[in-house]
Image (cartoon, rainbow, N blue to C red; front, top):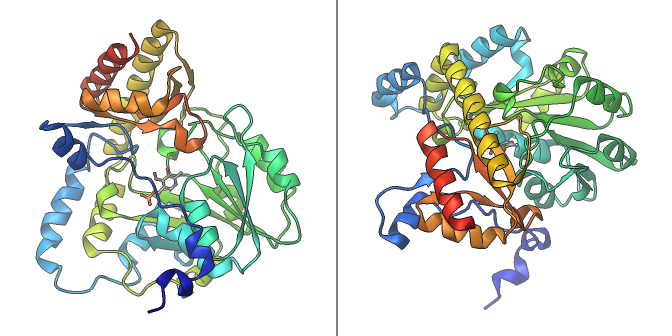
Length: 365
Ligand SMILES: Cc1ncc(COP(=O)(O)O)c(C=O)c1O
C-alpha cells in the first residue's frame, strides 16, 4: 500500500504543528488538581459582555438553521462603527481565518511573504500551505525592524504581516514609523496590519493601519473579538480593506464560515463599549502590578502595549513552565519564540496575577 507521506503535498510535510501549550484540562488531569490559572493564550479573564451572553441565549434555539453567510447585521454595524463601506468588511472564523484567506487568495507558489521573527504562528502556517516563501526578519530589541522589512521587498513579494502590537513581545510601531514604511511598499504588495490587541494600547504614538485602507492602499486591518471582547471560544474576527481586496477574499471564503451564535454575540459586544473599557482598565492595572513585582525580583521585561508581558526569568523557560504548572499556573514558554529564558504571561485578574507572582517567586528561589 502506498504511504500517505508519498502522496501528501510536500509543503504540508514542512508545517510544524501549532503548539497551543497544554490545555487546562490536560494540566488538571496530569496533576489531579481542580483548577488551573491559564495565562498562556492572551484570553480575557473578564469573559464576554453580559449583552453577548443574552444574545447567545436568545439565538441558541436557532442553531438548526445555517448562519447568515454574509454576516449582514454585523457587517452593517461594523461599517457604521468604523465609518467604512460595508463592502470593505470581511468576517471570519477568528482573524486566523482571514490570515488564511489572504494566503488562499493571493500567495502563488514561490511568492514571498515577509514577517518578523518570531512570528505569530499563523503567518508561516499559511505561507507554507500555499507553497509561498517565508522571509523572516529578526526583531530589533523586541520591536519590528520595519527598515529591514522594507529592504527585504523584492519582485516576488506578495504579502507583509505586521502584528501591531507585536505578539509575542507586546511592543508597537508608531504612526511615523508605519508611514515611513508604507512609503516604501509598492502597490503590488499587500500589507496586513494584524491589530488583535489594539484595544489595550495606551501609547498615543501607536501606528494604526486603517488610514492606509481609507487611502485605498493595498492594505488590510485584521481585528478580533477574541481578546478585549472576550469571545475567543466563538471564533470570530474581521478584516477591513478596500472593497476590491475584500471581494477577492470572499471568493475563497467557505459559504457558512461564521457561526450564527458568534455573529450575534459579536454584534452585541460591539454595542457594549463599557465591557472593552473594563478590560482595558484591568490590563493597565495588572500591568503596573506585574512591572512592580518584576522590578522587585530583578527580572527584565519588555514594556507591553498588549494584554501579555514577555519576561526574562533567567532560567530555562520549559523548566519554569513545568514548575509553574505544578503550582496550577500555565504560561507560554519562550523557547518556541527562540527566547529560551523568557516566558510570555497573559495579564489576568488581580487574583490571577497575584497567584502567578507567588508561584514565580517560589519557582525562582
Ligand atoms: C497577533 C495575533 N493575530 C491574530 C490572532 C488570532 O486571533 P483570532 O482568535 O481572532 O483568530 C492572535 C491570537 O492570539 C494573535 O495573537
